Image 1: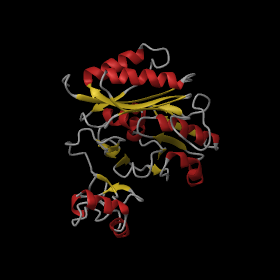
Image 2 (image 1 turned 120 degrees about the horizontal axis):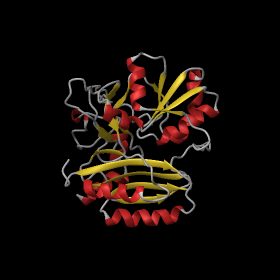
Image 3 (image 1 turned 180 degrees about the vertical axis):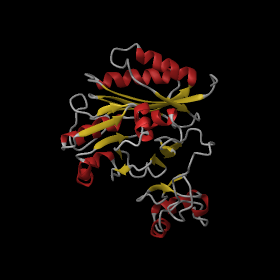
Image 4 (image 1 turned 90 degrees about the horizontal axis):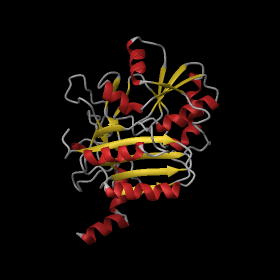
Length: 305
């Protein structure tokens, strides 16, 4: 990788932070000095970040973080960036780095870590276990592990509400998975708190697994929360499959769009042929287009034109 190419870092760490505002100021100063963009969330319970910059600058960021008392030991997931994955730098202090309705402290209760290598061997050996995908429902339509169990959530904080749907797995071996691992720290703990007996969490998340075993047991592309929207590894390999489907015509596709109607903004997969040809915009259903044409949103657009 050339020094001029861009790189995206995905990382987190649950660690007690006494003064999140102080850390926020330090992170803004550090990222601005390295021309990094992205999103960082800081809370008393830890840090969660996804940032992009030139490779030499992301290396400097990691080097700085490794020298700090709080953030040494962070495992970074790296992927190729575009230079435009994020429009700006956002560093915020919140009550939690990952919000869930029921308080869960990963330092006190959390699932056992399973490495990408071990999980791969479980697949190869046909071990009896269940993958529970702890991502939001719109994330796993573009890519997922084979025979996975969808959690059924649209927003992670609703996980406690859908636990009854997973109750049939309480006496089975369960492996929780998510993009980089941070949500599974709490999700696996929540399962244990609710009577699940044998709970694991994929160390490093799906991205780590895909890097090591592209197109093996994980099908399709990984949804990511930046302008790239999806991330694939060895997509030219004949083993790579497109598992997403256009919501309108069901053709194989993994391109995400947002419904243009402001009140809806449903995030879904659509092929180019199903983009509204009259307006060249995306609508998840006819009703949304009809409401859009009557809305102040459309009126403002017409005036600006």
